[in-house]
Length: 279
Length: 279
Image (cartoon, rainbow over all chains, first blue to last red):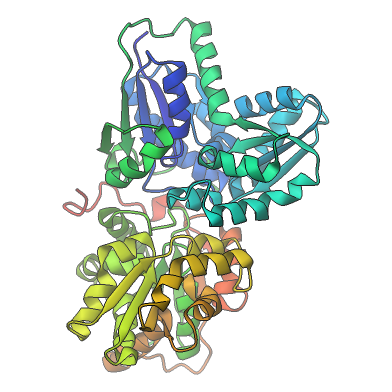
């Protein structure tokens, strides 16, 4: 089935998920939308994030996707139900795949989850982990500076990155953590700094990597895997600033982004809002 | 004239400007709008920032303001012309007042401007300074981490704040800077850390403080100062997350925010967009 996989994110972070989709499913077409006009979602409320996510997802239906990936942890944590209810295609979020992998690796040990203010605040990872492992010991920690540090181009060797990682994560060293879940798509770019702070005995789960596996399994189950021989392409759409997306985004994707197109607001804004969704 | 002064910002940073308006003009009514659903503006493009700013400013016309303050440095830097053209009331931005004060204090010496990526990238401060002082020596530096550091609640004594300030500003110490302009409304909350990094010989200009003076002078000139005896009140409106605005915003305003109201998107979203404004 040659219809594309649609992937969306609040901005460019979801490209770290797209990277794993590309390597796991090299024959698939991918259409990616980054909501760069309204990024970030991580400090915003559930109704607003759900409204934005539904607007973007509905725009992506134009491409007749066979499956939709909410590559944004905040959107997955706050709006997955609204997306599943509101869309006529299967939707995969990043929280459940990350939580499931963490439970398997932890083998009963303590799991730490790090993410944005909204992702951690709503408790979605904790709930998902407890659904797979009732009574699991979960420590959740918001790490708001990691996103702007990555966006500024700082890497794992940067002294500020190391100091911030120490500030956020050193308390976890006393907690006998066995697994840490990178519950934000920006965090894989700081993986080594996070690993260095936590020490060699802590497993790291990249929710995006796990999500690519779930997408692959779901498509196989539905009989919808692409059987085309040629390599799939990826087209990117953004609500603002295609140049910045292309420049900064390549680090997330691991190679140059070839196709980026600006989408004006009248193509995706749907006001009045979805009744009952906003307070 | 008892009509209010309307103040808007991408989020809560403009409250540091409102604080000076309140102390300079204690009799005036203030209506404040923080676009917390789409915050921040500082990494976004000129057309998008202009579109958002005009939407918010037009919504504020409902309150029949006698004057509008673009309390956001990014909106002032990228969209002041669009605001002046598009609104039937006088508009005051924060860039020109800050630039003018810097030129006066510098007395021919070097001026440094710090702000968001968009404010610095568009060169608005540089242009304003050069309009007052042709040939002035201006150094501009984006300091993207300062905003999330403040939003996270870190203050001037925080070790990470000190390290980031040192990282951004220590190169300025070799440049014989006489004045630094705080070209972002969040930066006054880091004033002491910035001062400590630059040393005691560098004057600090808070654009918000200077803007309050310009607003006062403009209202006096127009004969529109409020003559009412009672103290003016301030009402705040936000496009998302009133609770977070109230909690975090009090630090910017210097006291508790009493009235915060959520405004749903159908009250301010104007799509299709303003013709010709977006690419």
